Image 1 (cartoon, helix red, strand yellow):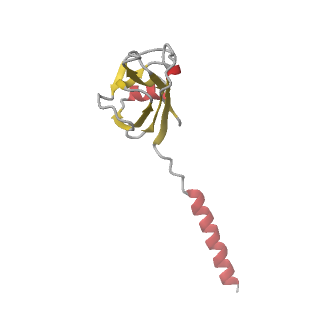
Image 2 (cartoon, rainbow, N blue to C red):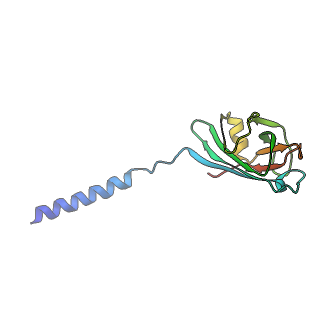
Image 3 (tube, rainbow, N blue to C red):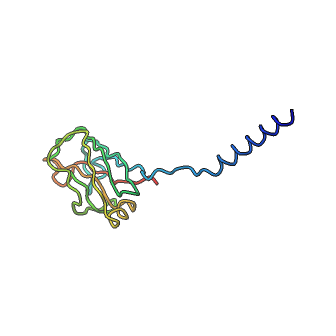
Length: 144
């Protein structure tokens, strides 16, 4: 009777120790998102159009993947700009001239671009004929 009890206790101890030794795997992918609105443009505009950019950034491969969706706007141009919230900046990544919603975009960032993304220096901007400087905009944020 003592042997089965001893075996059971040793098994339980080994199971407990082996569970504590295993480190939880942390995914290299972190969520990235932006909510696009006319109020976020600089200067702000009264457009009722809306949009989102949602995706992931992979810290191991430096790959940025976004799905961009929009409603209420007929785009004439769209891209990612580099500038802090409340300021305008130059185009960094162009999405081309095929305007579909949803639209999937993937690019690989340099170390400097990764730092800028994580510092909140990138925004998605969708331009239209009515708002040539941008109808809806959203600052990309990384949730680490």
